[in-house]
Length: 318
Image (cartoon, rainbow, N blue to C red; front, side, top):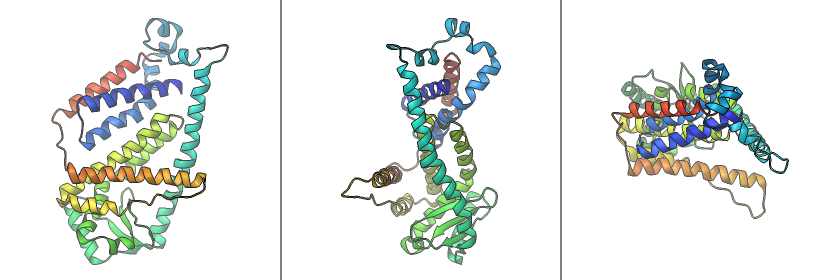
C-alpha cells in the first residue's frame, strides 16, 4: 500500500510536468497521460517483483534504491511513528469516502438504469430516430435505440456494451431546440464510439482495487472529465456546431442548495453541486472559446518518453 501510493505521487508528478512542459491541450492525449496515474501504480509493484524478486531485499534498498518509502514511514519521533499513523489516517479516510460517496451511489445508479429503460422508457418519435440515424451514419456505428423516461430532471445517458441505447428524460424534449438536441444526441453517440461504458467500468474496477489511494480518487474524476471533453470534440466534428452543444450543457447545471442552519447533508450537496457546475462550466467555456485542438504529430513519442521515465524511476523507489 505504501509503495503504490508513493508510485502514484511520483507518476502524478511526472505526468503533470509532461502536460505542462509539452502544453498538451488535446483531450485524448490528456486522457492517455492521466490513465498512467491510475494504472501504473496498480501494476508496477507485481511486475517489478516478477522481474526481480530481490527488489525488496535489504541489499537492494541499501545499495540500489533511490528512495525507500517504508523507511520514511517508520521514522520515529519521541518513540512515535507520526508518518505511519498519518498514512493510515489518510488512506482510511479515503477508503470511507470511496465506499460511501462513490461505490454505493454508482452501484445504485447502475442497478436502477436498466429498470428505468425496460419499465418506464418509451421509444422516441421518428424525428429523433431519424436524427440519431444520421449521426450514426457519420460516426459509422450501429444506430442505437432512443427511449424517453418519465423523469422531472434533465437526464440523458447511454446504456449497453454491445447493443446500445440512449436514455433521455421527457423535459429535454421541450427544453432543447433542434440544434441542442442534435448536439446532445451526438455527444451520447460519441460515447458509443469510444466504448465509454466499458472503459469507465474497467477504470472504475482498478480504482476500487486502489480504494485506499487518494491519488486514484482524484485521477478517476479527471479521467471521466477528460472523456466528456473527448466526446465534446467528436460531437463538434460531426455537427460543426459548438455553440449548440455549449447551450445544451447549460441545461444540466445544478442549483447549489442553501440553508440558514448548518447541516452536514446540505454541505455535502452544496460541494457536489458546485463541483459539478465547475466542471460543466469548464466544458462550456472550452467549446465557446477554444474549439477543437489539433492532435500533435509527435504525441506518441512524448507519451513514450514519459512512460519510460515513470517506469525507470519507479523501479528504484521501494
